[in-house]
Length: 249
Image (cartoon, rainbow, N blue to C red; front, top):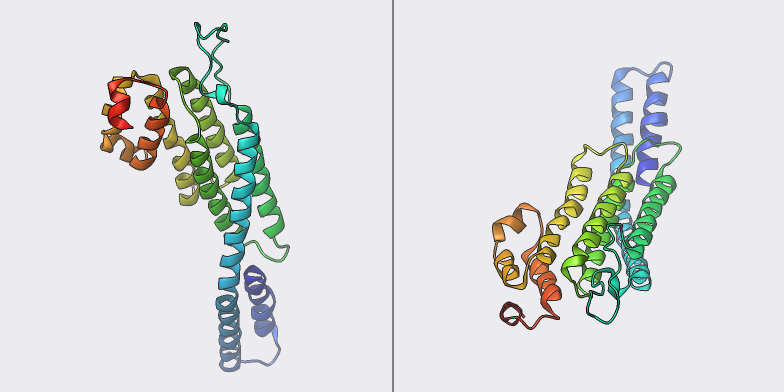
């Protein structure tokens, strides 16, 4: 609606005033100013409704994404059986998990649908579409991190987690296709690519995990909140009986 008001003003009101025969600048200027004022007033009135709509849409998307992740994720994805567990250990996979693939597909479809539905024929302004895609990206990251913290991890699970992070980075790049160099796109992509640093918690021994958690500078450089790091480390050590696990947990 906001985009439509802007478009109507720029494409119809302004040209009509300028094209009106016998209308001099002294008359045209006040007319255009009044039209601009009406446009701005309408935009300010609609802004709260637009914000509410974006918030509700993002929330519903997040709820659906969380359910999808839970339905597709398997405990063995990040905690594969090892030799000696009574079964032969399968080859370590370096492909994204089924849950991640499904979630990324859902995210990409949602973003594509947003841009398609909010692209008005009478306006080239995609401000609201971009804002909603940014919101969906933020919600997806929050929901995915919360989902990851439901599971236990083994060192062999690092490859799967790394593959999942890469899949998400690709999905976010796709959502901002054509505007990858914009500040919104760069921030969104970095918010996911920085999560690759969490794999370091999975690839080291128990005693080294505590030291990594304490490296605030490293996590800050990757844009990962320390609270997430500590929670992920707890997942990594939750099945361990080492002194490091006891100290952290």
